[in-house]
Image 1 (cartoon, rainbow, N blue to C red):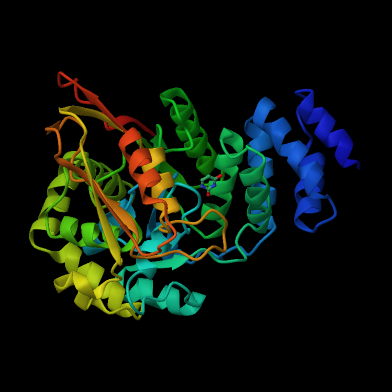
Image 2 (image 1 turned 90 degrees about the vertical axis):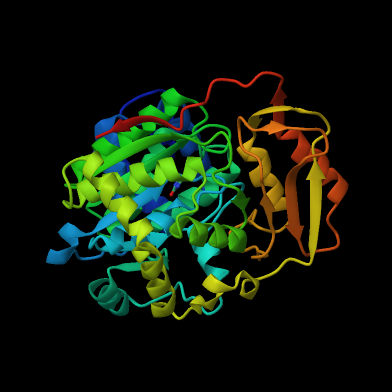
Length: 435
Ligand code: URA
């Protein structure tokens, strides 16, 4: 078989055979097909897509390039949540303890942040002592004992995805529905997840920029999971503006604790109730969202979600005393306040720009192995719809390195905001639920 032929077939919009897909995925994973041919292939897929069968076969081959967690009988009852990535998205860390406090088992393999989009593992690593690498047997024991565990992605899971992602990242082919769906589902199925709630983010701070692409990705994910015998729900949500008031690792940990104490910003609250609610349904605890929401409310009110978060931190070697003293988290050396130049109502805060600023000040990484500053981040006191007077504080930027061009950062920060003179209709946060 010849890689050029396979690339040509896809370039010309032909349907690939099972053998061609097997050959290509194996070939690039074991290094026989060079990166330049893989680049041409992903670009051909970007333009011509994969049909349902090709996508299933492609995903199946990707799964088989790595370790496959052998599901045990209990795993049928485990639940998992996956976000396609956003700015200020700390929802997993709020939802997982709540759901575990309801008696569901929530083992979670999470990723690190890349580019403007943050990662759950980076947030957890800002907690002193917290271990994100745990061997498989200890992790299973932890899930049995406390019902929750959050670890980094195993290096051996769907190995093809790592190589492919590295190439997609530098060839402008990340934003392809079949490539995103196969990347996500291969890792989920290989790690044994059966009951998944997807949060498919759409907007300025997401890979999917418009609602139709988001709906398309949501349908693709749900149908693909079904083909592997799992069950899932995809909630399509608005990621135009950052979630909550904080972006940056240790700052977001503080926001998680505040949310678990019941102090939730409106946007986070709506998504927590929806996504945790869907998890309770898919995990068999309730049969309606109304019932689910009542249970979630109780777990927040009686602080059992917060207790579960503490338990998770202690079990994984972290020191939870910061929960009562936020100064025990990494602290930035500098704080710069940004004030509004004019009065008006905030109609938009560009999540991608805010995400890029957090990257520029050290809170994220451009390349997989970059070091990050856990204390760096951004505070956004005002949200969409808020009235702002001239000179009101619209942001605080926390950073620790001297060689930051803070005036440029302030300019970029201000350019992320749009103001209008009359309040606009509230934008929808949840667009659709696909099952
Ligand atoms: N998350 C993934 O795991 N893969 C993608 O391609 C995009 C988001």
